[in-house]
Amino acid sequence: MKIKKLTSRRNVLKGGAAGAAALAFGGTNFAFAADKVTVGMAWPGMQDAVWSTSHKLLNEFADAAGNIELVFTAADMDVAKQSSDAKDLISRGVDVLLVFPIDSKAISSSLKRARDAGIPSMSFLRQVHADAKHQADVFVGIDAKWQQYSSSKTVFETMKKDGAPIGDILWVSGDLRDENSRLRGVGLQEAAAEVGANIVQDIVGNWDPAQAAAGLAPALKAYPDVNMISVASDVMMTGVQQVLQDAGKWHPHGHPDHMYYSSVDVFPIGLENLRSKHLDADTIFDVKGMCRKAVEIMPRLAAGEKFEDILIQGPVFTPDNVDSPDLQDQLWA
Image (cartoon, rainbow, N blue to C red; front, side, top):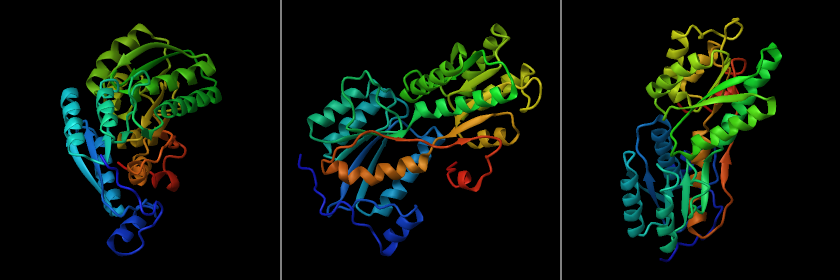
């Protein structure tokens, strides 16, 4: 397959609707190609707010660039269908294959198929598993390990200031197939090791509040001395909150029975619980920054340029800074 070449990699769209759109999205200097660059998107589904918002922003940034066509498929969380979708996109001769893996190991075969066809690939939002035989040419997404590390470290620092003991903690993880969940677990482990905390149980919540609650309730009874919970995403927060309320452990910071609590993503419920001081730290999932960077490099990737993985690190929201104008500007949900 012949890859389209850029006539100029850093021409900035300045006029007309496309130029206005570029300014509206932060003045991003999108690469510009003489020919349209077609990007095939093998998406997992639209069930999650991050997924649907990312899809929306990618389309808006691509429209602003003016030279990028996105061809979208959604697999409805079916690994076999995502593989079939990727195969169809490759057969169509797209210039770039963008995969958002449902299963971070199973996607490897699709990446090999793209490479065999001479099509560069981008893993977006969710990394390919480190042990997978075939990797994407570039990953663009959140630094998932940093998210959980920074959020948990902030809570540990708060506990130290409060003179609260740091000992046993519970970890409510996401989907076992999801590399973001695994990496967030690594981030928590690193932060815990720095302060001598002990992760006594990994409760697999599968990004589902009900499943998180079902695992957390017996864990709290099994480990009555736990005084910190770390959660892999705000998406499970309603379940966690209900369990803590039922156990008499849902109290704001400053209350003698406060359960210290870290999470990531900064969904609206996370903001609500930060403002009420029930949640101590929450590191944002910078959807805007991630989508902007992905679209910016698509034409350059199609032209054969090589990239190191691009990991986006967002700030930590706390009860003290949650309404800072600078942080509010980064919200997407």
